[in-house]
Amino acid sequence: SAVISQKPSRDICQRGTSLTIQCQVDSQVTMMFWYRQQPGQSLTLIATANQGSEATYESGFVIDKFPISRPNLTFSTLTVSNMSPEDSSIYLCSAGGPKESGYTFGSGTRLTVV
Amino acid sequence: DQQVKQNSPSLSVQEGRISILNCDYTNSMFDYFLWYKKYPAEGPTFLISISSIKDKNEDGRFTVFLNKSAKHLSLHIVPSQPGDSAVYFCAASANFGNEKLTFGTGTRLTIIP
Image (tube, rainbow over all chains, first blue to last red):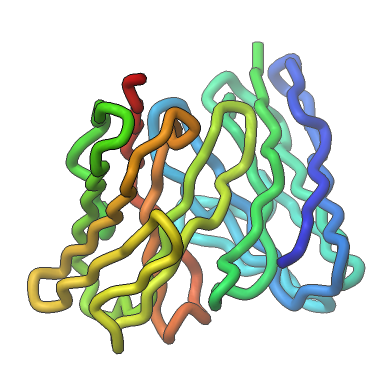
């Protein structure tokens, strides 16, 4: 199964600023996914990123707030824009196929907005 | 609308005994189910999956049971070991796993030595 390197692992940011999170996969994958896990809650899908096309956003998430890039089959970024304390969460990327090996996740980015 | 539910936020089990984690779903389009384990400061790690064409899948100490009529699945860990202490998430997908994953809220499992 794919191995994903995600960075940064954590950051503390001022409100109104933006943070870009990067995920690098060790093999080519068709789909990458970005999730948010708010404190004490489940993983919520933000968007699906396919190479060469615009990301598909889930209800409640918009491109202006969470722009995503997918320049090739091994890399993606998620930007959290104009941050507020409500954006404090763990952000996770995921990739790979679901079948016997499941989707692989990055180690997550713990974001705190002050 | 929580389509995948894990009604037990926490569970404590004696080492060596069986741990049973439960998950219910409401969307009848779901036909592929996965369990993930998550340690603090790490991403979820895939454990085991099951397709709706089966009612049981086993991998070492981990067995997943699926009851389609009840829209219920469970993960059995036997024997439980201290390293199994983690948060466990069930997830569901449609189109035999080719659609997005919908996650439950997680169950924190603590194995008591």
